[in-house]
Length: 147
Image (cartoon, rainbow, N blue to C red; front, top):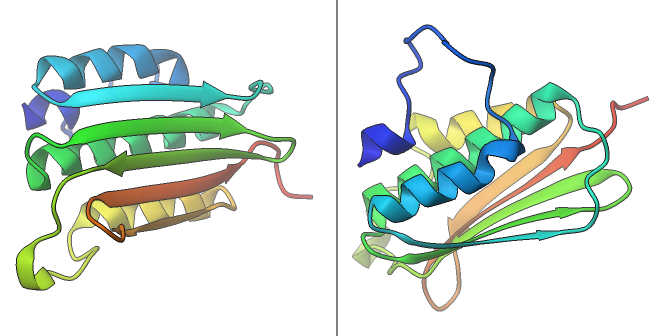
């Protein structure tokens, strides 16, 4: 299941880099792997640089992989919203927080990589346990290059 969601970074690309136009396909692959996923898109997407499309797709992909790996059969909601200056990507799951929270958030490469991807575009990303249970990844990606 995880191999379906996370592609090997070492493999040579055989097709154009994925973007949000492939979000429905990613959601369906995730459902086929056994997760309950809903997607919501709000606002009108302006023309976006390919790097923003790729970053948003990869953040969602990694988040879904993390849910599959750490939250079991949790329900997941993926939200993409646009305003005049930013794209907001939010991935929420209703999984249970690990007891004792023995492993700090972001000790692997997944969340760190998502943060770096967002920061490289002038955006930001936060990730953490939600009050009452579950986990949230929230990213802001500028839709226009910084002046």
